[in-house]
Image (spheres, rainbow, N blue to C red):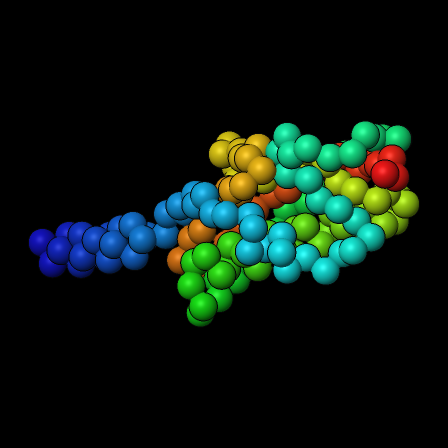
Length: 142
């Protein structure tokens, strides 16, 4: 009988500690992160956001980022993950001599955002995760 109680107690502790580990999908505004992007030579256009005509398509780019959750809060953690992911898109654009990334979308597992104002981010008690993709292009000069 004591063995059963110990086993039941151990299983209860495991269940309670794992119950809070579920990842939540957050929808957050892009603006604070996009405003902080320091790439003046590569423009980012989210979702169906209007942009100048495309001179040439250079191909797709995608990256996934998972970072440890910061002590500054969930939104700051997601913003940091998005910033790192966008920096990778920008780096790809530069290496392919693109001046823009268009149709940028964000995703966490099956939740995708094609919005030009909000992005999707997965947030657990320990990490923030996001995937981004977009098309590397050369836009026509005005």
